[in-house]
Length: 212
Image 1: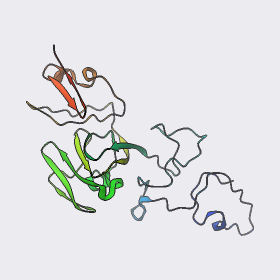
Image 2: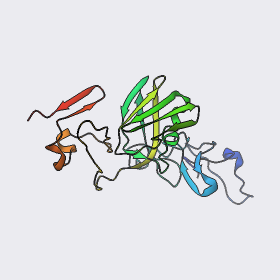
Image 3: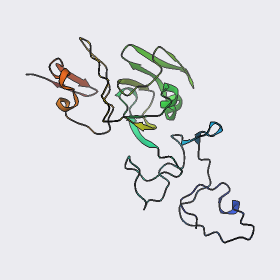
Image 4: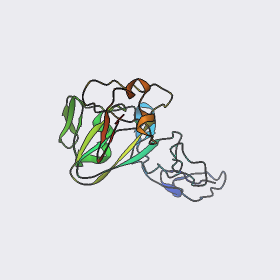
């Protein structure tokens, strides 16, 4: 019995040579799985793979709380809603290839550029990026500029909450990220050594000040 699998050629593509019977069950597809780099042995899934969230809905959920993916490799994936023009965002899961062109690939030509503290990266032609900061890191914050409303699809590996957050602050303003999935209070998010020197936090559409 075959269920919730990606079979090249579909049911008609299976050859048994009269050795057994194929029971074609629910959830099977016949589509390019869009592996990341199969020629070099990387069979993880690209963000637009039809195998994502296409596994058996009755099986255990993936660690990110979504329906299981087809295939041997779980992909932590999430969507970030973006409105036209600038969006202040950070990332709690990233792929191994953290180049801007790869992380933002699902946006295609809609994304104009990315600005972070100390640098920026611009898409000067569809697929061509130039700039001084063309990588995405979990500890940094980024202004992502798009032409029209869109959803950024990200597949990768989540930040380890047990690892120290590499927070380095200088006097004045710092554009940093929050590399975790779940929100927490500002007082709990800041390390003890930073609480006495931080006067406030500003995010897109809001702020929080330490008044005492």
